[in-house]
Length: 297
Length: 247
Image (tube, rainbow over all chains, first blue to last red; front, side):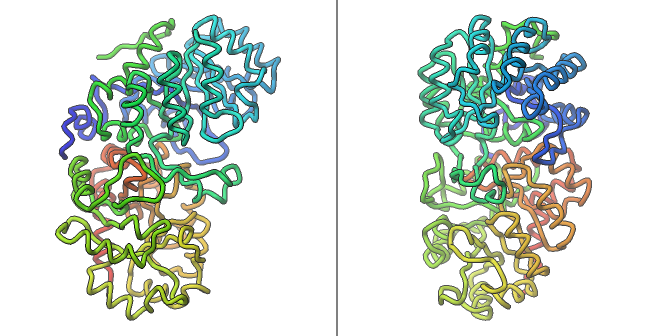
């Protein structure tokens, strides 16, 4: 192997690195009806994190996203309380239920280990630019929270340009562009470059999107495939800078090693790897009163 | 360190841009060396997408000359349009050219992967134990296996979303059905698959340049399975399949 990165070598040999841990800014929790996720049970998810050197993960529960957000957010709180050294949370906001969203925002100050909100506009069929998100956006702006927004290229509800439009209006909130506006790379990277409060988040970015091979799944019918993503990390580092990129996996969807492997074997510098895999996340999280502080050995 | 034999990678310029590709066999070798992959079963971009196997099959052989680490494959087409030799001629050519695996891209080349199209050719491939890598959705692959249960089929890039509910029944029903790992990225997927079926049906593939080589590499190298299973997936299973070819 001619890759000279000591971090890459350490991961290949040991599966983890004390000097360069993974902080996963885009996780989930619990089973998901659409797919079999063998890593979904709590013990298995924690085992995956241990195997892959994931020091901390920030999650929104599948139940909150796909069902009752109040019940799902409460469940996420239980997980955080049980495992404060590993789990942090995003409070899910579904703008289709404004009363529930208002209650979630009102209770946010009492939530332990939550660092902001998760928006899933496409799945909730509610554009991120529409007024239902305003209460959460205003609260996040006022309190300088993180907002992880699911984005995808060419979509009606959460394209990267829609995310940029919202982020520009709420400059004190930090927006993580979930999936980096997959496929609309130029727009996404420009948004991260131009807007100080927008970062690219890498979940699924490291996998070619063969939607043509998924035509039997109704929810993806008609989506354009992206033929390949090799080189996307280098492109993002070059155009937006590695300080504007954070690591994520959708765990328990995707294995952290699959994701980390793309970064470790991209043609970038180790300083960029440190930024992407943990330093940027540490910088974002240091303002929050965590139950268990982050510590790098 | 594992010895990797990549069953799914290609070089050449694809029709739609990818940020970083290997235009030549030399460039592919350089990327393999960077990552630590010793061998690869390769195809040329011209064999896939909207260039043509009629161009790409020969171009591949020409361009990998002098690169013994790169082993050739061939993309197939239906025989009815005089673009594909019949079985006996196909096997002759494969033997002459050291080809022991085939690729089918039915979506890009617009044909049906079924018995109406391929008749007894696929029966012959099954008898000769020639593995066929199929770039098609899992439902089509299931239909193919129903028609040709003895055919050795490798599902290329079943993912990235977790598709175990689709392909595990095929693994159980068809003893010659395999999965390559370039898109098998679901957390604990390899582990739970091996718990149930063992490692023999998984083949290491990177899908390069669709994906980074490092993704599938690190995923396998540090998966929660034993070292012997890792090495079987990394190269042993593919070596076994290719050694069983009888042409």
